[in-house]
Length: 378
Image (cartoon, rainbow, N blue to C red; front, side):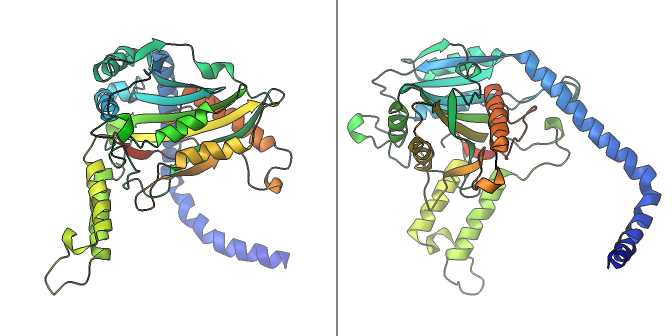
């Protein structure tokens, strides 16, 4: 039996080896060039990012905020930036697109808002914040995350993971416009889903913490200047294709020579298409969301894990899009990680990636996932 198996493998693999070995002088050098190039780009980008430094700003919002969320959308429009310079800057100096981290953090029930950015974008961010929301207070603060370490004798991590979209990112989530917050910001007219999220964050007790991090980087069609030999599919063209598919799939059969139109489908499907057209007509960011709930061992409450994840899920809509847990540091079944060593390692790496705000670039490029696209409205 053993010798028969060897014979079968030899007969199957032999012809393949005979075909590729004569071409080794071509593909072996190419393989080494590709590996060397990837190492070089990562090395230069890490040096570039390290040389930039970073700044964390805390945004203190007044109790009476008579501004529509559109003010924040305008702020995001104004910090959108995709320039990286010429090819020399990209491939010799390691230049990358700027990215930001929008963060909501609860420390024992005290809810704080932060924006992290490369240091040389601090003035731009402050200027645009005050331009759109003159009543806020903005202060540079030490990084709250740097003082936290994975110490099982002190902290229990209930959940550490990343969020993903429930559908393809051409479908938008429910936004402030869908909730009727675009026109009148008076309290009696508000039905803002972020209130429930902030209520949860504010309900945490002393010794408990919950962090939400939204990393954003200006979305664009990537080509050679942005480190891609082959451009990735265009987000807006994918949305146009999806709109045509919705109409084609849901319209009744037309007479010969007549293409189905928007008016031929139901009102519900028309609303979906309008939402698609509205969101794809705006500036967009490559996005990644991750977060954690953890607490000192004495006050850890496992039910707050579900509360944290559930408070994010409410921004979804069955007809459109929403958020769901993606990769998590833990495992579903005991036999996947008997001693908990894998979970411990995942938590250490995820915490380091969080502190560095790293996802779009080295050292944690595309860590456990891929970015999705959200418009400024979303």
